[in-house]
Image: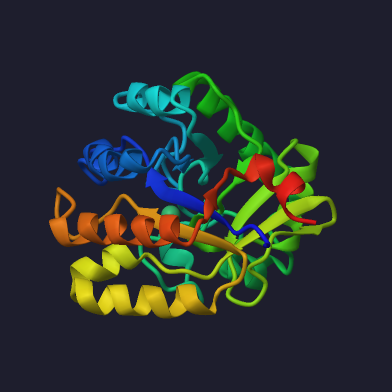
Length: 269
Ligand SMILES: [Zn+2]
Ligand SMILES: [Zn+2]
């Protein structure tokens, strides 16, 4: 029987309480459910979360990162989910194609491309990736070779910048090519499952369970699930926590093995 695998990732881990309060508290709510299953999680950390184009020189806020350090010592994995999760090449008011305000992209900006006729230069992206790892090193004592680009958005030059800075895996959102595959030496890991726990809090749990089971039924031997730390409220509602529990129970019942990106080269031929 072919083995089946899952990567479970959590996006937007930060301690920028001035921008979005209570993130680490919600992370611990998520981990309380997840840790009952004894599975590894990929923690997507954004050291300078929310920092604006005009303010990218302040030192990182360190509070809360001891908790992430503790999770890493328990065997969970770490990814860089951007340095700021914001556009770093244009101020907010210079965006007309990318309409999301505040901007949530970092490695690809279509307004920048339109204005300068080229993607964000490889040198600059390489600088950001190296900066991200330096920050992770100082905040949690560990660097990473996994990039989770903010807003699931990146360009071909991002892969080149990754190669130059020792990154090996990019965790991406891709409904079509969701089986891990190599693109010029970088493993691309696509996700095609949504954030159902957040959906459960926005609609209702039964509906979210139905959609999750439908998509799980159509998925192949490799899936990537993602959760966020941001919900409508300060604390994660029970409907979402119940949803995570139901999903993990289903995946366990299927015999899915939860892995981290570093195991992919051995698991996927
Ligand atoms: Zn931009
Ligand atoms: Zn994000």
